[in-house]
Image (cartoon, rainbow, N blue to C red; front, side):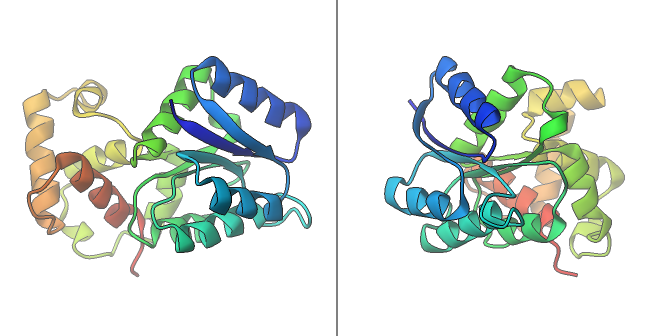
Length: 217
């Protein structure tokens, strides 16, 4: 049973998240409403995943992200799923910059059902990624000249973008109207061009996604 920490300043949304997660089998170890409370809870409780709003008291600017970044600096790979009203490119890049998995970034008004949200929480808790397509698009806008990403074919970029959303090979094949063997071939090509040596495929998928999203320009 996954242990979840919720950080949200609005009572109704915080309480709703707690009940939703509990209804889907998660254990909510804490529900906090400010940046200082979040950082303390992250470091003391070390949850399997935290669901974090970007703007928390006391200043409602970036407390949520700053707390998550500070905690991940002390506990590398600590899984964080960000919920935000906007795409905060700088902070998204900072979360990705350490090269660890367990990162998600969803836009609140684009979470359309409980299954979508719960699936994202589970993927991040397991060390994967769950990125909203709009977040991906914004990050990639400044990543177009990044080598060796520029060596990817248009189809490989489509496959990698779907991987960043957390989709499996089967889901990618359905989305792009490709056979699963074709997706596997494209995936192998992506790994090779990004210089990811053969290892656990799940780990390589995360590393490929992080390389794709984390700008070096």
